[in-house]
Image (tube, rainbow over all chains, first blue to last red):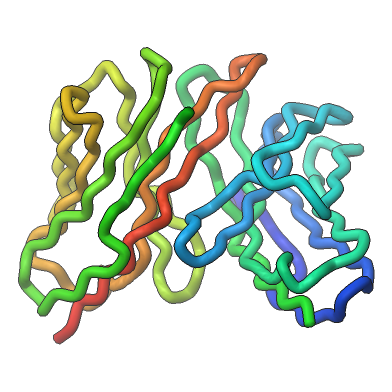
Length: 114
Length: 117
């Protein structure tokens, strides 16, 4: 089944304890991105990647890092989490086909930072 | 700047009522795409529709219909004869084109629809 898989789905952690949210897709998509969802703000893009070793900042990149060493994986790294990073996170991917534009989203990862 | 406005934060209806979710967008692009996604209580994002800027035809899919009007920069979504299973948060989104032929989605804040029996 074609899908985007995120882990963990739920995580409670404490301020300053480094964590990684993994994202993997099995559709051979070139484009991957991370969004965070907050009440009243909708979804906002954190980082995106157009291909292996090519990443760029989205609208809210502060406090996050990403890497794209393999086409299928795009982990989101919080080096020193803070309470304002408590949010629902979505990974998404899309094929580089002109006009396709439809993102496939993972199931979401709910992160709480105490 | 690209922007999507969903002015209705929450809507509450009784089953079988019709309901329209509003979406107004701003863009400088002449070519763009508009989307609607549904987020049920389980939390995943479900793609509903994509519309490109050159196609202003309204679309109907079962109880769902979409009205795209470039003149008013709106892409409204109507659910006819609503059902409890329609209860969800609905997001409208606009594509913003990036270099290299890719784009990102600009999301509205979402409208929470509650359908009561």
